Image 1 (cartoon, rainbow, N blue to C red):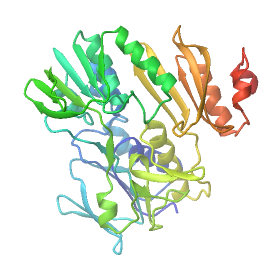
Image 2 (cartoon, one colour; image 1 turned 90 degrees about the horizontal axis):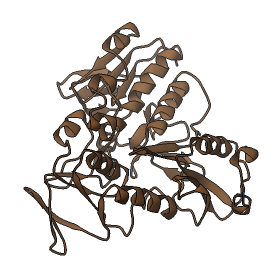
Image 3 (cartoon, rainbow, N blue to C red; image 1 turned 45 degrees about the vertical axis):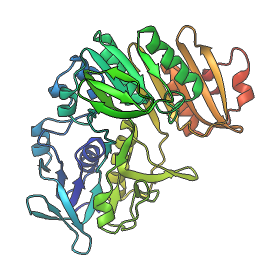
Length: 388
Protein backbone atom coordinates (compact mmCIF):
# COMPACT_ATOMS: atom_id res chain seq x y z
CA UNK A 1 0.00 0.00 0.00
CA UNK A 2 1.41 3.38 -0.99
CA UNK A 3 -1.61 5.68 -0.67
CA UNK A 4 -3.27 4.88 2.66
CA UNK A 5 -3.21 7.17 5.68
CA UNK A 6 -0.51 6.19 8.20
CA UNK A 7 -0.63 7.22 11.84
CA UNK A 8 2.51 6.71 13.92
CA UNK A 9 2.06 6.90 17.69
CA UNK A 10 5.35 7.86 19.29
CA UNK A 11 7.93 10.32 17.93
CA UNK A 12 11.06 8.66 19.26
CA UNK A 13 13.77 6.87 17.28
CA UNK A 14 11.49 4.12 15.93
CA UNK A 15 8.55 6.36 15.06
CA UNK A 16 10.67 8.99 13.32
CA UNK A 17 12.56 6.34 11.36
CA UNK A 18 9.26 4.83 10.21
CA UNK A 19 8.02 8.21 8.97
CA UNK A 20 11.28 9.01 7.16
CA UNK A 21 11.51 5.54 5.60
CA UNK A 22 7.91 5.63 4.40
CA UNK A 23 8.59 8.77 2.40
CA UNK A 24 11.91 7.41 1.15
CA UNK A 25 10.11 4.30 -0.11
CA UNK A 26 7.60 6.38 -2.02
CA UNK A 27 4.55 6.30 0.23
CA UNK A 28 2.16 8.91 -1.17
CA UNK A 29 -0.53 8.91 1.51
CA UNK A 30 -0.71 11.07 4.61
CA UNK A 31 1.71 10.42 7.47
CA UNK A 32 0.87 11.71 10.94
CA UNK A 33 3.61 11.45 13.55
CA UNK A 34 2.31 12.00 17.08
CA UNK A 35 4.53 12.75 20.07
CA UNK A 36 3.78 13.35 23.73
CA UNK A 37 6.40 16.08 24.29
CA UNK A 38 6.30 19.66 23.05
CA UNK A 39 9.80 19.60 21.56
CA UNK A 40 10.92 18.38 18.16
CA UNK A 41 11.63 14.63 18.20
CA UNK A 42 15.11 13.91 19.53
CA UNK A 43 17.63 11.23 20.47
CA UNK A 44 17.63 9.87 24.02
CA UNK A 45 20.92 7.89 24.45
CA UNK A 46 23.10 11.04 24.69
CA UNK A 47 21.02 12.25 27.64
CA UNK A 48 23.12 10.13 30.00
CA UNK A 49 26.36 10.86 28.16
CA UNK A 50 27.33 13.88 26.03
CA UNK A 51 24.23 15.97 26.82
CA UNK A 52 24.56 15.45 30.58
CA UNK A 53 28.25 16.35 30.35
CA UNK A 54 27.39 19.58 28.58
CA UNK A 55 29.30 18.63 25.43
CA UNK A 56 26.19 19.05 23.26
CA UNK A 57 22.94 21.00 23.52
CA UNK A 58 19.35 20.16 22.65
CA UNK A 59 19.82 21.30 19.07
CA UNK A 60 22.36 18.53 18.59
CA UNK A 61 19.82 15.91 19.72
CA UNK A 62 16.98 16.56 17.27
CA UNK A 63 16.56 14.03 14.47
CA UNK A 64 15.33 16.53 11.89
CA UNK A 65 14.61 20.23 11.78
CA UNK A 66 10.98 21.33 11.56
CA UNK A 67 11.40 22.21 7.89
CA UNK A 68 12.08 18.55 7.07
CA UNK A 69 8.62 17.47 8.22
CA UNK A 70 7.00 20.29 6.25
CA UNK A 71 8.98 19.60 3.09
CA UNK A 72 8.18 15.88 3.22
CA UNK A 73 4.52 16.37 4.04
CA UNK A 74 4.73 14.66 7.44
CA UNK A 75 2.19 16.06 9.87
CA UNK A 76 3.96 16.42 13.22
CA UNK A 77 1.64 16.54 16.22
CA UNK A 78 3.42 17.49 19.46
CA UNK A 79 2.27 17.63 23.09
CA UNK A 80 -1.06 16.01 22.19
CA UNK A 81 -0.67 12.28 22.84
CA UNK A 82 -3.01 9.54 21.72
CA UNK A 83 -5.36 8.46 24.52
CA UNK A 84 -7.33 5.73 22.75
CA UNK A 85 -7.44 3.57 19.64
CA UNK A 86 -10.68 2.58 17.90
CA UNK A 87 -9.70 -0.39 15.74
CA UNK A 88 -13.20 -0.83 14.30
CA UNK A 89 -13.31 2.78 13.10
CA UNK A 90 -9.56 2.79 12.33
CA UNK A 91 -8.96 6.01 14.19
CA UNK A 92 -7.08 7.32 17.19
CA UNK A 93 -8.24 9.98 19.62
CA UNK A 94 -5.81 12.58 20.96
CA UNK A 95 -5.84 14.19 24.40
CA UNK A 96 -7.33 17.32 22.79
CA UNK A 97 -10.30 15.27 21.60
CA UNK A 98 -9.25 15.32 17.97
CA UNK A 99 -9.69 12.07 16.01
CA UNK A 100 -7.24 10.99 13.31
CA UNK A 101 -8.11 8.18 10.92
CA UNK A 102 -5.68 5.59 9.59
CA UNK A 103 -5.33 2.83 7.06
CA UNK A 104 -2.38 1.50 9.00
CA UNK A 105 -1.40 2.34 12.56
CA UNK A 106 2.18 2.07 13.85
CA UNK A 107 2.61 1.90 17.62
CA UNK A 108 6.06 3.19 18.56
CA UNK A 109 5.12 4.03 22.13
CA UNK A 110 8.51 3.14 23.62
CA UNK A 111 9.06 2.50 27.31
CA UNK A 112 9.33 4.39 30.58
CA UNK A 113 11.80 4.03 33.46
CA UNK A 114 10.75 2.11 36.55
CA UNK A 115 10.38 4.78 39.23
CA UNK A 116 11.72 4.93 42.76
CA UNK A 117 10.01 7.57 44.95
CA UNK A 118 12.37 10.47 45.55
CA UNK A 119 14.85 9.49 42.81
CA UNK A 120 15.33 10.97 39.36
CA UNK A 121 14.85 8.91 36.23
CA UNK A 122 16.25 9.96 32.87
CA UNK A 123 14.05 9.64 29.80
CA UNK A 124 13.56 13.23 28.65
CA UNK A 125 15.68 16.35 28.29
CA UNK A 126 13.82 17.82 31.25
CA UNK A 127 14.77 14.73 33.30
CA UNK A 128 18.44 15.13 32.43
CA UNK A 129 18.38 18.85 33.18
CA UNK A 130 16.95 18.19 36.64
CA UNK A 131 19.51 15.47 37.44
CA UNK A 132 22.78 17.31 36.80
CA UNK A 133 25.37 15.63 39.06
CA UNK A 134 26.70 17.50 42.07
CA UNK A 135 28.21 16.67 45.46
CA UNK A 136 27.32 13.18 46.65
CA UNK A 137 25.69 11.15 43.88
CA UNK A 138 23.92 7.83 44.26
CA UNK A 139 23.01 5.73 41.24
CA UNK A 140 20.49 2.99 42.00
CA UNK A 141 21.01 0.14 39.56
CA UNK A 142 24.27 -1.03 37.97
CA UNK A 143 22.89 -1.32 34.45
CA UNK A 144 23.92 0.81 31.50
CA UNK A 145 21.90 3.87 32.57
CA UNK A 146 23.20 3.84 36.14
CA UNK A 147 26.80 3.28 35.07
CA UNK A 148 26.74 5.89 32.30
CA UNK A 149 25.38 8.38 34.81
CA UNK A 150 28.01 7.31 37.35
CA UNK A 151 30.76 7.88 34.77
CA UNK A 152 29.56 11.41 34.01
CA UNK A 153 29.22 12.21 37.72
CA UNK A 154 32.68 10.84 38.48
CA UNK A 155 34.23 12.93 35.70
CA UNK A 156 32.42 15.96 37.14
CA UNK A 157 34.30 15.41 40.42
CA UNK A 158 31.37 14.01 42.41
CA UNK A 159 31.52 11.39 45.13
CA UNK A 160 29.68 8.48 43.47
CA UNK A 161 28.11 5.33 44.89
CA UNK A 162 26.32 2.71 42.80
CA UNK A 163 23.77 0.49 44.56
CA UNK A 164 22.82 -2.81 42.96
CA UNK A 165 20.39 -5.44 44.25
CA UNK A 166 22.10 -8.22 42.25
CA UNK A 167 25.46 -9.78 43.15
CA UNK A 168 27.12 -8.08 40.19
CA UNK A 169 26.76 -5.29 37.66
CA UNK A 170 25.05 -5.59 34.27
CA UNK A 171 23.72 -9.06 35.08
CA UNK A 172 20.88 -8.72 32.59
CA UNK A 173 22.96 -7.68 29.60
CA UNK A 174 26.65 -8.65 29.86
CA UNK A 175 28.83 -11.64 30.68
CA UNK A 176 30.57 -11.77 34.04
CA UNK A 177 33.92 -11.22 32.32
CA UNK A 178 32.92 -7.98 30.59
CA UNK A 179 30.91 -6.69 33.54
CA UNK A 180 33.83 -7.24 35.95
CA UNK A 181 36.08 -5.17 33.70
CA UNK A 182 33.54 -2.34 33.51
CA UNK A 183 33.28 -2.24 37.31
CA UNK A 184 37.07 -2.23 37.64
CA UNK A 185 37.29 0.79 35.32
CA UNK A 186 34.75 2.64 37.49
CA UNK A 187 36.53 1.72 40.71
CA UNK A 188 39.79 3.12 39.36
CA UNK A 189 37.91 6.40 38.98
CA UNK A 190 36.81 6.30 42.62
CA UNK A 191 33.26 5.00 42.14
CA UNK A 192 32.05 2.86 45.03
CA UNK A 193 29.79 -0.18 44.54
CA UNK A 194 27.35 -1.81 46.96
CA UNK A 195 26.12 -5.16 45.62
CA UNK A 196 23.34 -7.30 47.11
CA UNK A 197 22.00 -4.03 48.50
CA UNK A 198 18.37 -2.91 48.61
CA UNK A 199 17.13 0.66 48.90
CA UNK A 200 14.58 1.17 51.64
CA UNK A 201 13.92 4.89 51.17
CA UNK A 202 15.16 7.96 49.33
CA UNK A 203 14.92 11.04 51.54
CA UNK A 204 16.01 14.62 51.20
CA UNK A 205 19.80 14.51 51.09
CA UNK A 206 20.18 10.78 51.77
CA UNK A 207 19.45 7.21 50.73
CA UNK A 208 18.53 4.60 53.33
CA UNK A 209 19.33 0.95 52.64
CA UNK A 210 17.38 -2.04 53.89
CA UNK A 211 20.15 -2.88 56.38
CA UNK A 212 19.92 0.59 57.91
CA UNK A 213 22.95 2.11 56.16
CA UNK A 214 22.47 5.80 55.38
CA UNK A 215 24.29 7.32 52.41
CA UNK A 216 24.59 11.08 51.81
CA UNK A 217 22.98 11.95 48.49
CA UNK A 218 22.64 15.33 46.82
CA UNK A 219 21.41 13.67 43.61
CA UNK A 220 19.83 10.23 43.30
CA UNK A 221 19.21 8.62 39.91
CA UNK A 222 17.35 5.35 39.42
CA UNK A 223 18.30 3.08 36.54
CA UNK A 224 16.48 -0.13 37.41
CA UNK A 225 15.01 -0.99 34.04
CA UNK A 226 12.02 0.11 32.02
CA UNK A 227 8.38 -0.77 31.48
CA UNK A 228 7.07 -1.02 27.90
CA UNK A 229 4.25 1.39 27.13
CA UNK A 230 1.56 -1.10 26.16
CA UNK A 231 -1.54 0.48 27.70
CA UNK A 232 -2.95 1.78 24.40
CA UNK A 233 -2.51 -1.63 22.79
CA UNK A 234 -3.97 -3.44 25.76
CA UNK A 235 -7.04 -1.22 25.90
CA UNK A 236 -7.48 -1.71 22.15
CA UNK A 237 -7.58 -5.49 22.62
CA UNK A 238 -4.23 -6.30 21.02
CA UNK A 239 -2.12 -9.20 22.28
CA UNK A 240 0.33 -8.03 24.96
CA UNK A 241 2.98 -10.04 26.83
CA UNK A 242 5.82 -7.92 28.25
CA UNK A 243 5.44 -5.82 25.13
CA UNK A 244 3.09 -5.66 22.18
CA UNK A 245 3.36 -9.06 20.48
CA UNK A 246 4.14 -8.89 16.75
CA UNK A 247 4.81 -11.37 13.95
CA UNK A 248 8.01 -11.44 11.86
CA UNK A 249 6.58 -8.58 9.76
CA UNK A 250 5.96 -6.53 12.93
CA UNK A 251 2.16 -6.83 12.66
CA UNK A 252 0.18 -7.09 15.87
CA UNK A 253 -2.84 -9.36 16.31
CA UNK A 254 -4.65 -6.78 14.15
CA UNK A 255 -3.05 -6.83 10.66
CA UNK A 256 -3.74 -3.10 10.22
CA UNK A 257 -1.68 -2.29 13.34
CA UNK A 258 2.09 -2.61 13.71
CA UNK A 259 4.35 -2.19 16.74
CA UNK A 260 8.06 -1.27 16.69
CA UNK A 261 10.88 -0.31 19.02
CA UNK A 262 11.06 -0.71 22.80
CA UNK A 263 7.36 -1.58 23.10
CA UNK A 264 7.41 -4.49 20.61
CA UNK A 265 7.93 -8.15 21.46
CA UNK A 266 9.15 -9.83 18.28
CA UNK A 267 10.72 -12.98 16.86
CA UNK A 268 14.48 -13.37 17.26
CA UNK A 269 15.41 -16.83 16.06
CA UNK A 270 13.21 -19.32 17.86
CA UNK A 271 12.43 -16.93 20.69
CA UNK A 272 10.40 -13.80 21.22
CA UNK A 273 12.29 -10.87 22.70
CA UNK A 274 11.87 -7.19 23.41
CA UNK A 275 14.96 -5.02 22.87
CA UNK A 276 15.64 -1.53 24.18
CA UNK A 277 18.24 -0.04 21.86
CA UNK A 278 18.65 2.51 19.09
CA UNK A 279 19.65 -0.02 16.44
CA UNK A 280 16.56 -2.13 16.98
CA UNK A 281 14.34 0.96 16.81
CA UNK A 282 15.96 2.15 13.57
CA UNK A 283 15.85 -1.29 11.94
CA UNK A 284 12.24 -1.89 12.88
CA UNK A 285 11.24 1.60 11.73
CA UNK A 286 12.78 0.82 8.34
CA UNK A 287 11.24 -2.66 8.22
CA UNK A 288 7.70 -1.51 8.99
CA UNK A 289 7.95 1.10 6.23
CA UNK A 290 9.09 -1.60 3.81
CA UNK A 291 6.25 -3.92 4.80
CA UNK A 292 3.60 -1.20 4.49
CA UNK A 293 4.90 -0.23 1.05
CA UNK A 294 4.89 -3.80 -0.25
CA UNK A 295 8.02 -5.65 0.87
CA UNK A 296 7.57 -9.26 1.95
CA UNK A 297 10.85 -9.38 3.88
CA UNK A 298 10.47 -10.07 7.63
CA UNK A 299 12.45 -8.29 10.31
CA UNK A 300 15.66 -10.22 10.88
CA UNK A 301 18.59 -7.88 11.55
CA UNK A 302 21.29 -8.86 14.06
CA UNK A 303 20.76 -6.82 17.24
CA UNK A 304 23.63 -4.67 18.44
CA UNK A 305 24.14 -2.30 21.34
CA UNK A 306 26.74 0.04 22.78
CA UNK A 307 27.60 2.03 25.89
CA UNK A 308 30.17 4.79 26.31
CA UNK A 309 31.66 5.21 29.79
CA UNK A 310 34.77 7.40 30.25
CA UNK A 311 37.01 6.55 27.26
CA UNK A 312 35.69 2.99 27.27
CA UNK A 313 33.36 1.81 24.52
CA UNK A 314 31.41 -1.39 25.15
CA UNK A 315 29.75 -2.91 22.08
CA UNK A 316 27.58 -6.01 21.86
CA UNK A 317 26.65 -7.89 18.70
CA UNK A 318 23.80 -10.37 19.12
CA UNK A 319 21.99 -11.18 22.35
CA UNK A 320 24.38 -12.80 24.83
CA UNK A 321 21.95 -13.46 27.68
CA UNK A 322 21.49 -17.15 28.40
CA UNK A 323 25.01 -18.16 27.35
CA UNK A 324 26.69 -21.05 29.17
CA UNK A 325 30.26 -20.53 27.96
CA UNK A 326 32.38 -17.45 27.40
CA UNK A 327 35.74 -17.31 25.60
CA UNK A 328 37.91 -14.19 25.99
CA UNK A 329 40.20 -12.92 23.23
CA UNK A 330 42.50 -9.92 23.30
CA UNK A 331 43.97 -8.34 26.41
CA UNK A 332 41.62 -7.38 29.27
CA UNK A 333 44.54 -5.89 31.20
CA UNK A 334 45.12 -3.32 28.47
CA UNK A 335 41.37 -2.76 28.22
CA UNK A 336 40.93 -4.03 24.65
CA UNK A 337 39.29 -7.44 24.39
CA UNK A 338 36.24 -9.38 23.22
CA UNK A 339 34.13 -12.04 24.91
CA UNK A 340 32.49 -14.67 22.69
CA UNK A 341 29.33 -16.00 24.31
CA UNK A 342 28.04 -19.45 23.39
CA UNK A 343 25.08 -21.64 24.18
CA UNK A 344 26.59 -25.07 23.69
CA UNK A 345 28.44 -24.74 20.38
CA UNK A 346 26.19 -21.95 19.06
CA UNK A 347 27.54 -18.41 19.08
CA UNK A 348 24.93 -16.09 20.61
CA UNK A 349 26.90 -12.89 20.50
CA UNK A 350 30.17 -11.06 21.01
CA UNK A 351 30.90 -8.38 23.60
CA UNK A 352 33.77 -6.07 22.66
CA UNK A 353 35.54 -3.50 24.83
CA UNK A 354 37.53 -0.96 22.82
CA UNK A 355 37.66 -3.42 19.90
CA UNK A 356 35.45 -1.84 17.21
CA UNK A 357 36.82 -4.05 14.43
CA UNK A 358 35.80 -7.17 16.36
CA UNK A 359 32.34 -5.70 16.80
CA UNK A 360 31.85 -5.03 13.09
CA UNK A 361 33.14 -8.48 12.12
CA UNK A 362 30.99 -10.17 14.76
CA UNK A 363 27.86 -8.54 13.36
CA UNK A 364 28.81 -9.80 9.91
CA UNK A 365 29.46 -13.33 11.15
CA UNK A 366 26.21 -13.51 13.11
CA UNK A 367 24.22 -12.24 10.13
CA UNK A 368 25.76 -14.95 7.94
CA UNK A 369 25.29 -17.68 10.61
CA UNK A 370 28.97 -18.61 10.35
CA UNK A 371 29.74 -21.79 12.35
CA UNK A 372 32.10 -20.34 14.97
CA UNK A 373 32.67 -22.86 17.79
CA UNK A 374 34.19 -22.28 21.24
CA UNK A 375 37.28 -24.39 20.55
CA UNK A 376 38.06 -22.31 17.45
CA UNK A 377 37.99 -19.08 19.43
CA UNK A 378 40.02 -20.59 22.29
CA UNK A 379 43.02 -21.32 20.03
CA UNK A 380 45.86 -18.91 20.93
CA UNK A 381 46.18 -16.18 18.31
CA UNK A 382 42.60 -16.57 17.04
CA UNK A 383 41.80 -13.69 14.69
CA UNK A 384 38.18 -12.89 13.94
CA UNK A 385 39.20 -11.52 10.54
CA UNK A 386 40.15 -15.00 9.33
CA UNK A 387 36.73 -16.34 10.28
CA UNK A 388 34.96 -13.50 8.52
